[in-house]
Length: 142
Image (cartoon, one colour):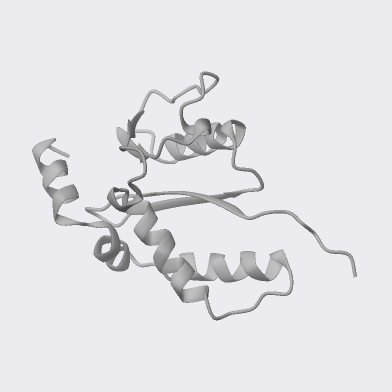
């Protein structure tokens, strides 16, 4: 049996107030894939202005990154994933899968996709809509 050592990298964005979400899978965690994610995300919601909160990963602030006009990148303080709404969602998804065993990457991919499709807007808002985030959105008029 030959193993496929392709990695599963999910990029995602969630809206804590409404529970809207956007996920896309890539095989790499790098500037090129992040650039493509931003382009896909921006084109999915072209009429909206998006403030995307990010950690300080090198590919998030690469000089080669071209940010779509309807996207603003907001960098969180270093070593503070607890302030990023998407991190709580990733933790929830991992929790759902932690006792499962996968024989190949395709099984993992299918299980993750199944969990993502089960996420309702109510689940997303309950996971990501912390009071301090909702307060900040209301102050910003969003």
